[in-house]
Amino acid sequence: MTSNSTKSSSLQSEAEAAVPLLDDWFDPIEAGLRDRVREFIQAMIESELEAALVRPRYGRRPKTDPENADGPSAISGYRHGHRSRSLIGTFGRVEITMPRARLDAAEGKTTEWKSSALRAYQRRTKQADSLIAGAYLAGTNTRRVRRALSAVFGGAISKDTVSRVWRKVKGDWDAWNARSLAEEPIIRLILDGTVVRVRLDRKATSIVLLVVLGVRDDGQKVLLAVKNMGGETSAAWRAVLDDLVKRGLRKPEFLIVDGGTGLEQALAALWGDVPTQRCTVHKHRNLLAHAPQRLHEEVSADYNDMIYATSAAEIEAHRRAFIRKWRLKCKAVADSLEEAGDRLFTFTRLPVSQWKSARTTNAIERLHEEFKRRIKTQTVLPSAETAAMLFWALLAAGQITMRKVDGWQTLTHKLADKPIDLAA
Image (cartoon, rainbow, N blue to C red; front, side, top):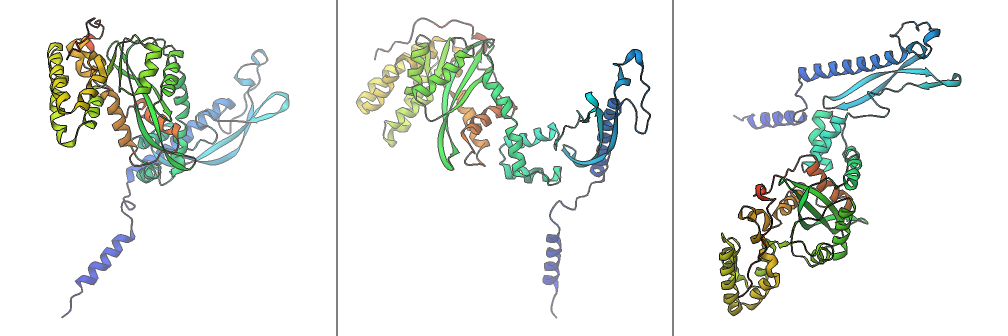
C-alpha cells in the first residue's frame, strides 16, 4: 500500500510558500489606529482652514466691521473642493482628503491657501524621515532600509527615498562646519586620520578622513572637524587646522598625534611650543615592523613593560634597558624607539590619573572602528562628502557617544617642567 504523506507535505509547503512571511499578519489595533490618525489629521487641517476663512464649513462670511477693517472679519475667501494626499509617518501610510480654498488678495486677485501643518508636496513627516535616517546610520544600506521598514510604511520606501532623506541632513552638516568655536573651552586636541573607500568618477577610490577631537576643560570629548582629503600631507592637515583657528579655536595646552610626518610638520608650523604626545600604540606597530616575526612577542613584552610602568622613574629605567638590549639584538628596533624622542613620553609630565587617556589616540581609533563597522554593508560610499558627513552624523544623532577622558578631574593641573631623561 502506497503512502501519500510525501505528496501531502509537498502540497502543504507549496501552500505555505504562496503567502509571503508576515504579509498575512493582520492587526486590528494597527488598522484602527491608522484610521483614527487619518481622521485626526483631516480634522486638524480643516480647523486650520476654518481659522483662515474665519468661518466653519458651510458657514456664512462674517459681516465687515468698518471700525475694525483690519480684524479677522476682513479676511475672505472660498473653498473649492478637495484633493487626495498620501502621507507617510511613524503611524504608517495614510490617504488624506485635503480641503482646498482660495483667499482674497490685493487688487482683486486670489491666492491658493496653503496648510502650515502639511506643507505642499510633503510626503513624509519629519519623524518618518528621522526613522529612515536613523536606520541608515545604524549601518544599513539604502536597499536594506527599504526592506526593513516596508512593514511600517506599507512598502512605500524606495532606495531613492532613503537617499533623498539622507541629503536633507546636509543643511545641518554645513551649519556644523561653519559654527564658531570661540566659546568652546578646548584644552586638548587628539588628531588622526582613517582611510575609506568612496566612489569618485564612477570608480572606487581610497580617500583619507582627517579627524580632530577636542577635550573640554571638564573632560568631555567633542568632535571638532572631519574633512575628506587625498592624504595625510602637511598641506592637508594645515588646511584643517587653519579652518579651526579661523573659526575661533584657541591654542590648546596639549596635543596627541599618531606620529605621521605631515601632521607633525603642520603642528610644528602652527603650535610648535605646545607639548605633544606621540601615540604609543602607533609606535608599537612601528617597532614590530622593524623586527622579524619571531621577535615580535619579545619586543612587545619589553615595550609594554616600559610604557605601562607606574612612575616616570620606572619608565626611564625600562627605556634604558630596552635601548641597550635591542641595540645588540636588533638595532632597527632601538633606532625606531629613539626616533620618537621624548615626545613618546610627554604623558609622564601629566598627573598619573591622566596617563591612560593621554598615551594614545585610541579615542579616535574607536570612532574609526565604529564608523567602519557601520559602513561595512555599503563597501563603497557614494561620494567623499558623504563619508565625512556620515562620520559626523553618527555622533550628532547619538548613534555613537563619547564619554569623558580618564583623569578629567585633574585636567586643570599644569604639566611638569621636567621631561623624561633620554640618556641610555
